[in-house]
Image (cartoon, rainbow, N blue to C red; front, side):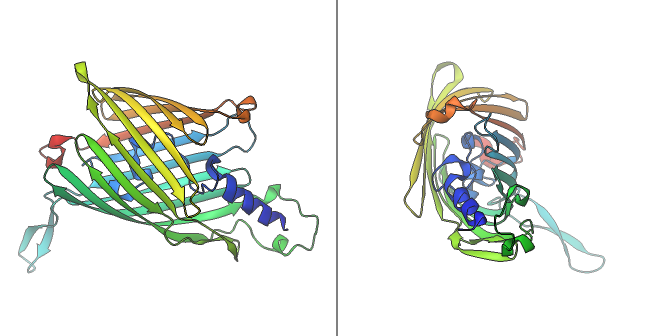
Length: 325
């Protein structure tokens, strides 16, 4: 078997540290659900920028690393565009009713000799049903799968791939879809990633035997008000693939107002996660530590994830749907 094929197989099995998990892994997704569900784009009415940096299994060479930068916003409930009726006469006409959300993000996910770098562009539509908001989202994505050929050694010097360019940027297109139900007390979401199940490409060659599998996410949570402006929010995230290999995250977050939070998660793949954060005006900072419940911890200092976000538009006059959130 070709060395490159071996690398691809390892990528498909071990990317992000979960069997058959081909997409980046996050521990603080509850603070930016847009990363796992396109329908979340603009659902809270804010204009948000989120930066996440994850270093997995610190201390192990070529361990997984993930970085992402996302943006999402809600188009204003009353925005106006100029409509020209003649050279001297112009008028403003309402162009939206505040139901549209847009967003996008870029990511870089590295694991040993292989990496995936890509982007996503999202359109979401939000519908009010009494005191609950139902959202639908659709994303177009593309990524570049790349192998660091400097670290490859071929015993057969006539290997055809030696004459190719493994670093050539050929982007593979795909799409994601999501549904999201949001209330002041609870949220439920379902999404599907990699709808087209695209095939991997290296250089000019397509690997017809290695395709990206559909990933399914089902999430939900409920907010329980406590005394003295404390809130307790248990939540769950179920992840599975076309091969019905699944992983479940059980989370519990304790929050004071919107300013401080601490929490604990258990991941069925064998990890306990501690996370905490603070808000300073419009800025949010979070940190998560993953303790892996396996022998790998004998060689690792755990996994660390940092999150920073900034949110604009918390004016109820400008965003009337924020009255309940």
